[in-house]
Image 1 (cartoon, rainbow, N blue to C red):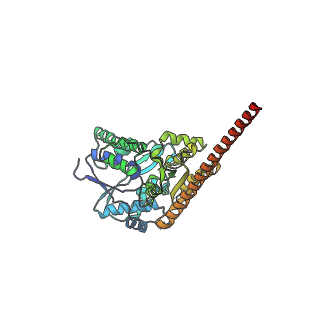
Image 2 (cartoon, rainbow, N blue to C red; image 1 turned 90 degrees about the horizontal axis):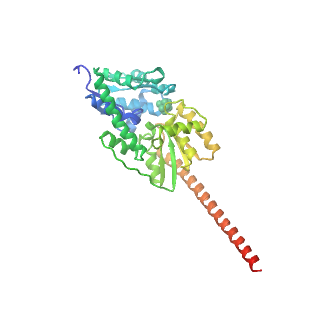
Image 3 (cartoon, rainbow, N blue to C red; image 1 turned 30 degrees about the vertical axis):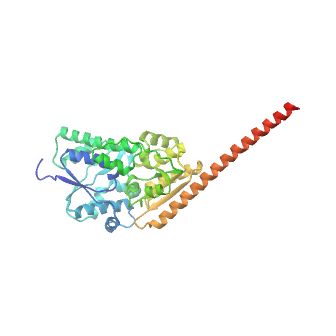
Length: 359
Ligand code: SF4
């Protein structure tokens, strides 16, 4: 490797990190490139990011900018900011994710190298091209070496994916995968209530952005499902069953996941968690809200921004969980009354039969 090329790269703990980090880590490490992660999201990181962009920018982008600043402050001079345009033919990301390198270049006026490969399946620029472009930025051109790095990336990613599908919590699966461990454990715990949260991984699994919604619900004795519990095929089928089409790159995570649980009725309610001012989310949540109304499935839409207060957030969650619990109790009591009535009718019939027999 040429000495003038960077030997370490910073990865902002935001946006594509949440779904792809095991792949990125395996890929870079296999090429001999050290990975530096930004710190976990804090209020300071959010406020820092918010300073650089116009106020109506969505929260995840403010957070992303904050993480880039965090890496620069740590002395990292080479940062990975991929431009993920589309993840399938005409399956697009929103304009902010597509233009992430442009946003960073225009708002952060500091000296650093940006590694900005493009993935655009609509234009036939697939993962292979994406990885070759990335490796080239580090002066690596050997195809065999790049292929091996892609395989290593997939090895970590596949383990992570299999563990989450088996029911392992997100952070546990991530920790195992990046440390080269595979834990074959299914954890299907039964709780009195269950919900599915439809939301982007970068909102849901960032404990600061989501105000740790998953743990809060678990403390309320609610079983939580997310997109990690739904296979790609099931999410696609669910969208088709609702007569909808996949347009957005995150459609499987949101519409597909909610639709899957709406169709199989395995949950008592749906929670939509989205960033204030997000265009794609408002369309997807509206679509699901329409079908929930038709199928009588309770839904709550929680929007978040940097000013969202924890107390109000908890109150809304508690009110929703209370409502689900009342609904469930009412349903159980209705069912048991129906059973009692059926028993009474059977007893009456038996009595009648007995009386006519002895007459
Ligand atoms: S999809 Fe929405 S929340 Fe995500 S980056 Fe785009 S506008 Fe922001």
